Image 1 (cartoon, helix red, strand yellow):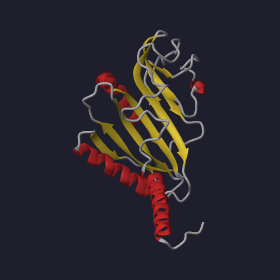
Image 2: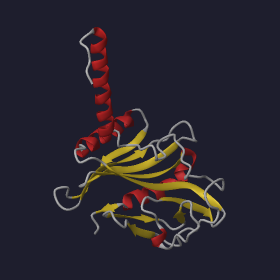
Image 3: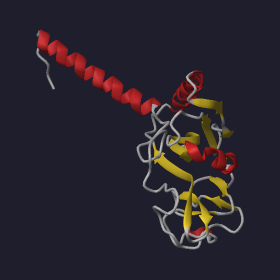
Image 4: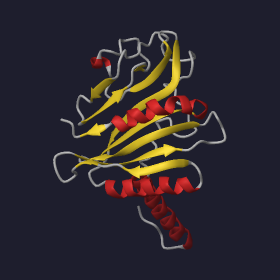
Length: 229
């Protein structure tokens, strides 16, 4: 594309350069929330409260179940009374767990789906993606959100050794209460592995249910372990 060296051409060049810069910085440092995830204040079709959505016959785990991802090098533990969202398959069979699953708690077995949810999103990034800068920027942003009372705690959480076969760099965010009780509030763990793949672990519910959900959600987030194979 050729721009003529006129006032209009210079303006077009500036606008084109600005778009490129915004696009790259957005990709580099906006790994915190993906469109597919129920981020703050955002609902998700797979997240339901009461019996208004999902499958009424979802079956919860009878005891805590530790699940190792079939292709990625991490595991996590889902509490008893939680189920694979959107399916009537027996949750006690770990083989029924999809690769990028969503789980919900069951308040009344087979009849009422609870308000707590946990989901996993895994996305490959390009090899040149600056994961270290993205994690540092995401953590800095969430620590600054503490000052405006959107976040209670944000901390760095790395695992393994990025210089060796398996490593994960990331940060964990515990969001603060908001004035609106229907606001979606969560505990997040997100970051990148040695292959530049982005992981977002999202435990959340509406703020009005947070006190009832927080212990189970935090337990799930804290159970996530990388480099287990």
